[in-house]
Image (cartoon, rainbow, N blue to C red):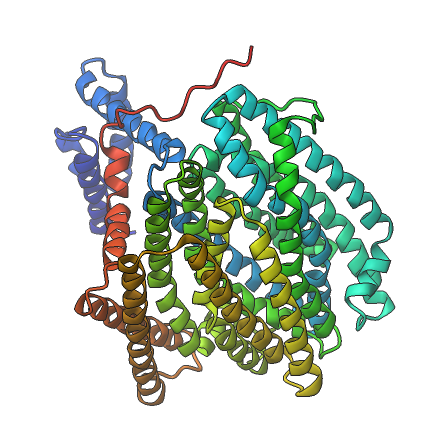
Length: 625
């Protein structure tokens, strides 16, 4: 390093400290301006030591720095534990963290493809197929008991008696854990039989690997069972950040297993990573639930009225989720009979397709669930209807442009996210077509996530169940016809999923509207807003397709990575500008929600350095005596 550049580095560092350390280096000795670099280094560090050891150096400065650090930590803690008091605030927290989780999920999938697709595509199919049975067991017992049964009951008891609420939480958790453990033993013992049942196209060696993977993943679901109850408790207290961060550490566990364990364990490396990630998912949430006052108790009291109500509400929701899982069973069953790698391509496309519905449908639905449950308990039907319509329109406003983006830019997006030497061009094209078919129903799926939760807030689990039964029968029929009769392969499976999702959403919303008796002004506003958003979406799609074709043909060489990034980014920006401009032009009210999200995003730094809020960060733990 030459002398002038070293002096420049020292001066820049000094200037940085002058700005950021409250005048710490406001008087720097002239000796630091000596030309010899070694002398500058010695004098520089000697000066730092003297400033920190000199008692006359500003206690005022040091106190100011410590004050800033304390304020930063206090407000960071506040962001982690603060109660979200409205749906948009809660949804913003969940959206940001779910967005990070989706990014980690994409990285995880890209790593899996890089390590195992190529000549080992069949082994990745086995990995995804092994997920189905443990995930189904988890969905039936845990998710079914939480979303429709436990959260509404726990929330009602929490407003009356915290000690009773904690009692119900412990009893419900223990009963579900016991049922999960007993069923897991059966699946563990007969894993090869269940593997052959859902994947008849696999040979004996593949079935053996699948059975072993299935057994490992059952351990992960045990951690998820506990973690999901912790999530429900935290959500009932209207705190959403910590649970939304949990999927990030779950994906990190799988990434760690893939990178560090795969060289020695092969496909079992990611499977062990699933177990590690599930444990981290649970461990991250445990401290907050303890701060809220939850203390696990060794009891199995199914006679308590709250526990009995939870158990009564569970079967319809569990059956409804079981019906949803039929789609996955059918997909694995049919994909195992197709070419090697087909199930992986379907899962890759579904991962992208799930982003709009997860990022906006699930997040807004989760954030709205406590509010809708409270309004239902208070019999405030007008506020319930208004909250539902507002949240539904916000979900459509946010999910629609992302769905259109996936339809138009399907191939560039797939290539950017998953493209590697082991992921050939033919796989990219097939995945892109599959993604386009799925993305056409992504906005409807986001709506369905909210509508189903509205039924659960009304303590109605039967209506979604019966509609789900009809939808499952239709999905199975259409999937078999599309793949076995017309030979559409993976695209046929995607077509069955999309058409079923659209029809199911329309039927669910029709039944919910009839039950809520939407008043004419609110119904008119809903129809008008949806029409505006539909027109805006169509024009936005054209505004994405036109520049994409032009830039692809005449400007960018999209066979290279950087031009492909430039094409995707520039086209996306054009589409976003057009979408926001048309929303403003058509006076779409939900545009204010987008502005509110931007304000929250840009105010995040101010929240970390401004004085902490006056309200308490967390509710005090109730007396357990």
